[in-house]
Image 1: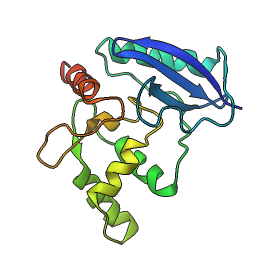
Image 2: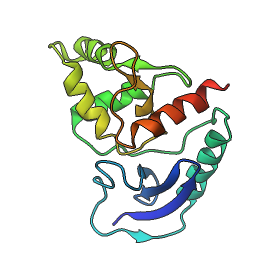
Image 3: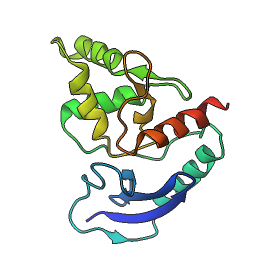
Length: 163
């Protein structure tokens, strides 16, 4: 059974979820696909992984590029996991397009990949902010889709660009 805790961020309340050793979820409370990856009923607990994640979030929201991220356990399909691994390579304060991610996947999967398929995987990212789905933009550089809301996406990118 997973455990959860809460974190009050400057952009609204977040729910953190853990399997006991790794972070398995990080969501804005009203975001799309909220807590979809939780396993069974979750109980509120204070775990070391939550303290580590909260320190990471404190540094992030203070405008610093956090050091090492907490241990993560990504729950999803093999395709989703491949997309989320690419998200982790997007440097702090920069963006990448859905099409660029699709192009990277073509090289790994040896088959055509659509930006729309990538968008679906990005939208289901269960570990917001740390796996930086907010750094993915449309082909023209415009902000498009974010399960936590476009205004939050804009604020997260602005926070990172202050560096």
